[in-house]
Structures are given as structure tokens and as C-alpha cells.
Amino acid sequence: MPLNLDPVSLLGIILSATIGIVALGVWFQSREKMPLFVSIGFWLFCGSFAIAGFESFPGQMGAVLISRMFGFISILLALFFYLGEVRKQNILLLERNECLKSEIAIRSKAEEAMKLSERQLTDIINFLPDATFAIDLSGNVIAWNHAIEEMTGIHSDQIIGKGNYEYSLPFYGKRCPVLIDLVLNEDQEAKKAYPSITKTGGKMISETYIPVLSGGKGAYLWLIASPLYDTNGTLIGAVESIRDITEWKESEDKNKRALAEKDVLLKEIHHRVKNNLQVISALIELQIHYMKDANSINTLRDSQNRIRTMAIIHETLYRAKDLARVEFPTYIKKLVDTLFDSYNVNDESISVVYRIEPIDLDVDTAIHCGLIINELVSNSFKHAFPDNREGKISIEFYQRDETYFLNYWDNGIGIPEGIDFETTESLGLKLVNLLVTEQLEGTISMIRDQGTRFNMTIPVRQGSTRKDQNKSG
Image 1: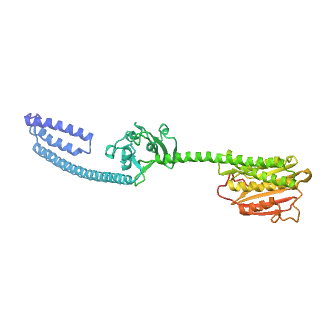
Image 2: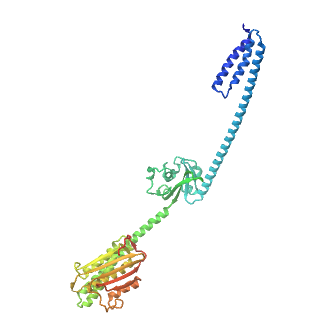
Image 3: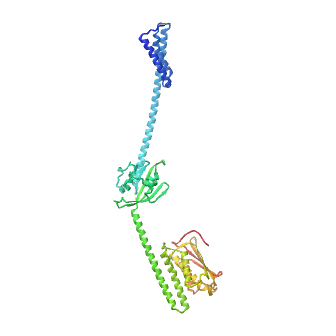
């Protein structure tokens, strides 16, 4: 069947083949975008022109009409499909547009909330009396209150929003990490700029001296830096408050100098009192050498020992670091050693057992207790061990709650039954009773138990301290 190669038929053949091949290729690449019937429709519609190019054959016109009809219908279906897809895409774009609007609104609200939070933070910080500033996680200044403006001479407009350690320049003259940065990142090198840092939870506290502040006079600063959180508990930065403690430091230094001068003065007073008491003791000793009466000698000797008891206190305080308290165990042992020398008693024949807790007594209590022990030891040396007999003395001193217990015992011949220590004419025992009950407001009892025992209780006064909690019975 020969071809009718008129131009229209030839063009139909070429278009049919080309569009059909392209349409099938597009369909294979993306079947959702170009369904198969679209390709077939284009192929049938264009193919009708090719059929018309053949010479006449039975049913030729019908084939052309059917081909063009199905092709046209397929194209119409493709058009409807395309319009449907366009509608879907429009709906999808509208939905995405709504989501984008919602996200923009949420972000705008968040930004507004952040700006409001920053304004509130600035308002709060501005009311603080201490110089205060805050930074975000990037190290940019987000708050700079009025107090720090006065301290540094830099207005908030000049520094808000700036980073790269801009806030360190007014203090150190260079860009470097400061205490607020250590809250967010503990830089060991930056820590060296501070003499000491106390960390409590997330807070950091320190002191430093800045020589460029106060017009070049320098200032001592107390610093505290802590993390900064938003209302949701999310870390958003850090805040630092700075207090000028120069006046307090100067006052503290002045008080320290005054206390040091006072200590020197008190030491000098104790030294002079001790020397004066030693002079009195030496005068009594000189007087004893010129006396013949034994009773008079004993009386002066007792007075001399009482003076020495007080002199030892002043000597101890002169050598001590603490001028308000006396280290009682050391004091008592030195006092008893002095009495051994005074009465010329051999320490090999009479032994002393000490059970004294390590307690620092206030001066008044120590003097009174020293005088009590002086009288009791002197009484033992003079009367408890006649004819150089051997013996033992026990001295106990300990604390229970708010009461001191002073117990004295010797295993000598004992005080005769007919003598009442509370009414006796003996000056020594009268003095012991007076010191315990009147001066120290305590109690005293005497027990004749293989010698003589005195049990005394004394209320604890302010100024006395225990060095440990060990209790001896």
C-alpha cells in the first residue's frame, strides 16, 4: 500500500514518532508526573495523521476518526489529571504556607518573650546596688546595670551586645576571661588571676585587687558569679555581681594593726606584772633570811608561793599567742614544779599524777584554780608526809557539759577527824573554800579516803575552750 507523502501526513508521522518516544521516556522516568495514558493519547492523536497519509484502504476514515477521538479523549484526561495535580500542589503549598506562618509566629513570640525576658532582667539588675552584668552563652553582654556604669565609667549602650571579653577591659585593661567566664567554662589558666575561689553549687566567689579603679587609686573587689537560667530552667548565660570592699578592707587592716598593737601592749603589761611580782617574791625571800621565828617564816613562805602562782600566770600569758586563755595543763605542771623547789621536796619521794584534759581556761578561772592547787599542794608538802615519808598526789581536771571537775587527793596521814575545813583557822583551807564557793561559784567537799580527797565542781565561764572531746574520768 503506497504512502501518500503529502506534507501534512509526513509531519504527522514525524510528530507521532517523536512525541510518542519522548512521552514514553518521560513516563519511565517519572510515572507519577506523566501517566501512561497521556503518552498513548499523544501517540494516537499524532498517529492519526500518519494513518491519513496512506492510500485509501477500507475503513481508513474510521481508523482516523477513532484514533483522533481516543487521542483527543486521552489528552483531555491528561489535562484533567494535570489540573488535579496543580490543585493538589496548590493545596500543599497553602498548607506549607500556613505551617511557615505558624512557625514564624512561634519564632516571633519566642523572640518577643526573649526580648521581654532581657528587659525584665535588665530592669531587675538595674535595681541591684552592686555592680552587676550578664552575658549569654556566646559571651555577649546582655545586661549592664547603673552601678557598674558608675564603677567603670562605661554606659550600657556602649557595651550591650559586645563580646570577645569586652567587659574585662575596664577592669584589667586587656581582653581576658574573668570570674563570670569560669562559671560557663572552668579555664585553669584564668583561675590563676584570683588568689582564691570558693565554689558553692554553681556559684563562684572570690576577691581581687584592681589597681586601675577609683581613679587609679585601686580597689578591693568582692566577686560572685553564677549561672543564668530562663523560666524553663535552660542555661542561657551567666551573671556576675561586684562589690567594692575597699573601705571594709582598710578597716579590717586597721583593726588587725590595732589588735597587734594591743597584743604587744598586753604582753608588755603581763611582762611587767610578772617582773613586779618576782620583785615582791624576792623581797619576801630576802626578809625570810633575816627572820628566826619558824611560824613567821612559814607564813611568808606561803605568801611568796601565792605570789609566784600569779606570776606564773602572767609569764605564761606573756609567752602565749592567745592572751585571753591559759593552757591549763602546762600551767599546773609548772606551778607544781615551782612548789617542789620552794619547799625543797624531793620529787622521787613524792610523785604527782596528772589527769588534766587539754583545756584552755579564761584568765580569771585559771588564776583561781591555780591558787587552789597551790594551797592544797603546799598543805600536802607541809603536813601530809611528815618525816620525809614517801607519798603520792593526784590532780584531776576535766569538763562534763558546762561544769569543770577539779579533784585533788594525797595518800598522806590525812586531816584529823576533829578539823572541819570549812571552819578551820587554817588560812590555806579557808582560802580554798573561799575561792571555790565565792569566787568561782562552785561546790567543794572533803573525803577522808586513805588520805585526803577534795572534790570540787566549777561552772564553765565564757572564754574557756576545750582542745578535744576526749574525756578522762
